[in-house]
Image (cartoon, rainbow, N blue to C red):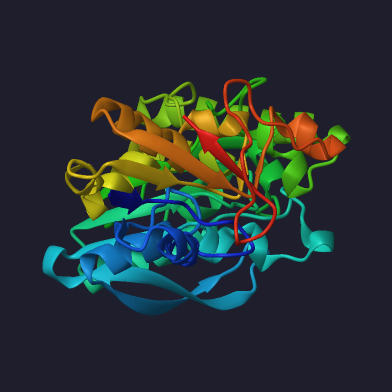
Length: 355
């Protein structure tokens, strides 16, 4: 039997490679004659750069940047020399992991450090960039990133450079000498910038936005979108993925000419997943939590869709399988409708889900 193992990370526990290796170890105990291949995967979230680095034989570069609260840090990104390709993760500079729980506040955090990373990679000679948009602690629509790149923001009155200063934004000026390579923004969500399904209302609370601050954050992003439309003649607020990473998807399209793509597709192409899947009998994927958000472009859904296209049977080994996030909050580890919880993994409590 030929088996392909292509999981995402179990966030906070194991990397995608570690998950794949543990699954392979368990399978070899009972299927000693199986031909098992592993292909660690990602979908634009945290771990994307590592997966592409391993697949394409890249190296890691370091640069100085600032974290979401403006503290100087050492950030890193992947360099693929033969393609002059830089692979960045916005979370490296502006991720939730950079903050303690008490520091989470999207009215104060910004993406300035992401802009610094982009500049460093451009100056290093990148002809193309992939930027993974996952794990953000920010909700600034790329405002901080744009300032780091040299965009000038003018206001009705002088204000501290926080997200709320966007209420008074009147003009944005492009830098005169900014040259950026082709940028692909790899996303694992399809949310627009604004509205009930937008960046603020869906993801703001988990980043520390209190209920009474949500409207202010929404107003700030709406004003940013209005001024961008007026000054640049483009309006990406309703594009799927514009709301990724607190609106950084919108910012990358508006200020950097980036193209939004599903992160799974970007990674699958880099690791040549389809060609590796063609000749196997069985596919196994997985992630930490299988829920409704999985269907929005997460790795298990992408692997299952590709396996179905090739006529392959596919299973998902997950930490838990739930109907939705409400079930998770209530501690109800139910299998999603149409998916059967079948086993425990050697990694911890989990389920095997058959697609």
